[in-house]
Length: 258
Image 1 (cartoon, rainbow, N blue to C red):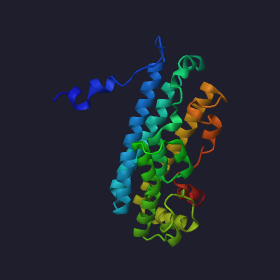
Image 2: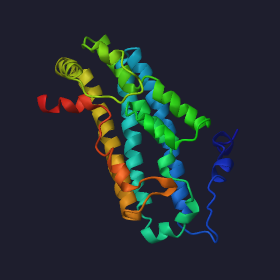
Image 3: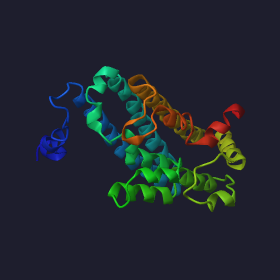
């Protein structure tokens, strides 16, 4: 077993296949950056599944450790935008037509991540072809409990009151802030220092997720302006609809009371 064998390096390096002829210099950067994002998304989903298990089993310290990792991965994802921003509008347009009907809007893993966190929008399923493995995974994420659903159970196990309407709600609906949940979080914040660590790490991750949305929007805006996105996506205006939408709204809802 060698380093290359273990990591399948030869196969990995064979996956970057620019479509421009003759090859445009900057197309390789575009491909590598987006393939790297898909790998980070895969790892984020892996860690989000772990933290759901941590919450369900009432494991505080593993949840803290996992959110430290999630926060750090998200910071790397945000920083990676700096590399993509070295593409000028002219350099991107030199190969943009080669994307044809493909678009980052079609990233099933990013949509999976939104659903896993509780930011569920069933109408987004229409942009993913039925029957494909990625679409089936996304549909499963839409119907299964999210990280927030597991978080409610965790809070309940630690003395917080969670309304029955939340525990029995339709899992395909997005997370919404709740005053009773916020009261439970606030009590734990003020009485349990270790819970404060967890809540701050979750807020850090949430802030990083919002920052990634903002950086992505500005990246698209500076590259294509108000043009329609590739693959029939609605471009910048569509992306702005979810800008600054928190994935853990109850943690933000109590900031003024701490």
